[in-house]
Image (tube, rainbow, N blue to C red; front, side):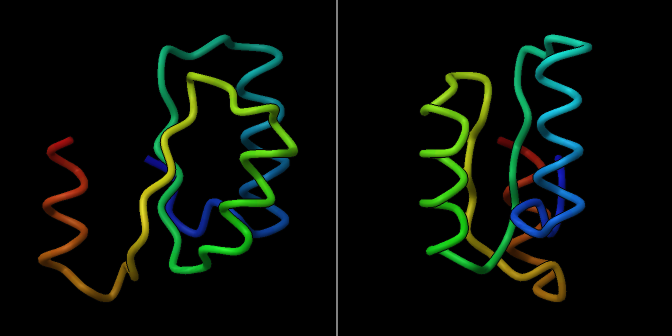
Length: 68
């Protein structure tokens, strides 16, 4: 899971992971719905990406997302 995944680092990290390592799944966890929407389009709705809304300071939400 990549927390803060819609920021500049997260987007570049996602790009590298998808191109070089071909992961089965990357969970993008962030609180910015607009950036998640934009990132979905940037990566052409790649099936290996799963976008999840939340704030990493919310420990309950973070633990629930971790179990998905």
